[in-house]
Length: 266
Image (cartoon, rainbow, N blue to C red; front, side):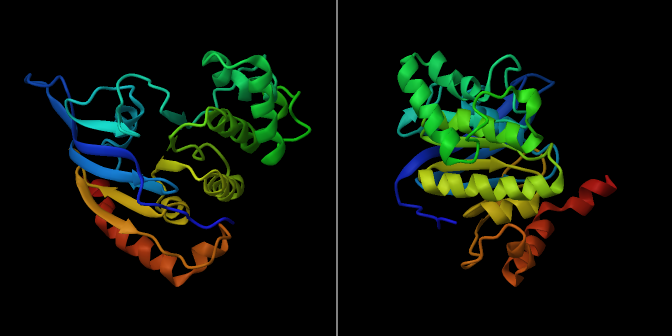
């Protein structure tokens, strides 16, 4: 697996971002407060936290799908406002169009963006052949396994060559074996493409295995409780890495910070 090539170049910056629903009313609910972090070129940042802490809402703010109550998010120096094309995101469901082939699904975003047909086809086929889908370009989604469908969804995201990739629990619907394999594949591809990525997940192990840094949010309203730099040495196998002492140490620390036992007892 290609090692991290994280640089000092900031791709995405969140500055004191707060999101409140029904702000200023008696029904106001603050999802998260004063979130600030930087995402660097070549880095994978994972965000974890207890259920209801605002992870998915933060994801939607970063993607430009929600406007924060205060603060700002910029990508490559440009303010994220609505969908700007600066970020690509991969959701829990693959959302492939069932009447389109693998090739046509990978090309979809390029078509919407106005790319020439031939250029879009060449870009899509290059990704399909490079990352394990060669020979399936004419297949419809119903003929694919769950892991293959998510791989197509990821190729569709990569095809647009976004500055930052947002991954919102993209492996949660898969069985454990497929999930581990796809985690390793997606991490490798992000490294090879030298992309910046943010992974939102409930799975602490997934966060540790995939990320260069793990950001831990508190209970709602979510605030940054800790940020951990992850160093697992040279081990890259998604199964073997979970057997290392370093992995277990990170897991114990982050599990303690989540206060999951408090949530369970509430």
